[in-house]
Amino acid sequence: MTEAPAANTREWVLNPESEYRFELEQRTSLAIKLIQGHAEIFGAELVDGKTYIFYGECKAAVFTWQGCTIQICQPSTDYISEETPMAAYANLHIAFEQMRIRSLVQIKNYDNGRITPPQQGESTEPPRVLILGPENSGKTSIAKILVNYAARAGQEWTPMLINVSPSEGGCMLPGTISATPIPAPIQTSTPAHTLGNSATTAPAHMASNSLLPLAYWYGHTETKRNPLLLERLIRNLGENVWDRVADDPQARASGTVVDTPSSFAAGSGSGAEHHRQSLIKACVDAFRINVILVVGHEKLHVEMQRTYGARGLTIVKIPKSGGVVELDALFRARVLRAQLHAYFYGERVEPPRGLPAPLATAPPAAGYLVAGEQPTDFTLAPASQVVAFGDLQIWRIGEETMAPQSALPIGATRVVSEMQPLPVDPAQAGSGLYNAVLALLAPPNPDESERYDEEILDLHVVGFVVITSIDLPNKKMTVLAPTQGSLVGRTAIVGALEWQE
Image (tube, helix red, strand yellow):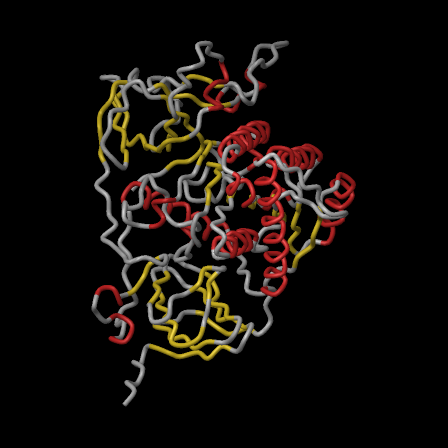
């Protein structure tokens, strides 16, 4: 006799090529269990019989190609849609997969000394994809779908997922841009971890520990704050990506997918428009883009066709999903706070209250999953340490820390550029360090004996700290870090991000 579902659960039968969409409210969670058939979330396949937990105002969709039955516990806003753009996204994946295979064959032939000319009209370049679109168009979801399909293809691809949207941060914190090889499908559980946890904070046994992002600190969430700095960091990131894959044919053939901010789609004012075009060009050049995907924006599609179509790039307009949710500034602020809190303190995920036995039963291996993995008591004990003002070298990039132009002497002009590192003295009034998030930088290359002023712009991020108090009389400050470790002699950059408990 089949056990009846509990009162707080519901079963949905999905037809082929349909999806179950849900939107969670604050302080709620949702459990989904695949009962029959095959299903996926943003391209990551669900395991039959496992229960997946979603939280943190997550908005996502369970899609099925052949049809399936799912069981839901504690639904919030949810519905089924028969109209999805997944067929178009799958066609893109098939085209990109053919590009990867042709590229790998050509690379191996070249390495073996055999020159095999491609057939007429056939490219041997791997897919290097730039995704453009306005705000709330689903660019990040499309990026995840494309890299997840590549990772699931069974060809040992490790596509590089590149995030140049500093408001999201990828698998690092907001304020960064990053590149991450994706060796396995990345799961979705909360908007605070769009790519799962990075190796800097994930427990060693978790698959997300294998995500090793290379990140640069921009320090702001808006591209308009310092577009020249962002352009410099994008080009730095591109150089490092090519260095990483130079000696790895499989990684080179896997290609790249670049997720961009909405400001790349439209600019306001002549200055913003110029910087927007410069940033797009920086991405195209730095990552050697050969395919530009434009999500549901006719004007932008025409612009890209005129600008880059003549250069041989393939410009493709793709549909926006009807399930994309309009996200406001308050939602994004809550997500940012959740990201910062999780970095320093970890998080403990509570399953839906009253999770019924069929969804929560032991043995432990049959229990629920968070981001596709067995949950742990993922809480950290961050370390606070008191350091002298001179122990930690702190810098701020650009002229925004200087006096306004109107405060300069008559006839004086500013000589500080947007990319000039400026030392920050915690003892000075208005230093802006209280509750500020600082990015710790990797040490300079020991092989380079010559030092230069803008060297710290070329150093990648290795971690983050927060200054929680400043003791001016004793010239000391308290610094919070997720783990123990001396900060003496370290170099850090402060941006515009602040956080307090």
